[in-house]
Image (tube, rainbow, N blue to C red; front, side, top):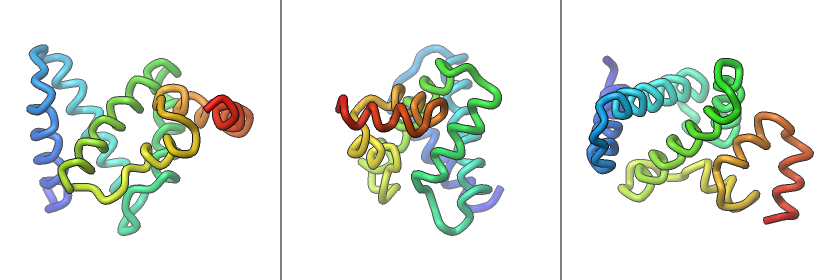
Length: 129
């Protein structure tokens, strides 16, 4: 395991402990999602780090394997994790937070719009704010 993956695993463990989840299956699924997100980011972004483009690519990749409802839920879970990382000084910028500034506070509808109807729905979200 490389140093970045080990740091990611430590961050995931700390985050999950902060949630105090009691259900082992929920913990396992959450950990798996965050691990796969971290792996995707490492392979997609390289040294440039996490960006809105990387998040959009991840959402599109998830949509190839999951229903829209699942993509929305997973986007909310990853957003919570990234928010926790930022609050704890482990992440400089949360791309979801940047998307919230542009399109509104709800992560699920933003994810749905970006994956499905990227241009039309994002414009709608801007006007509905």
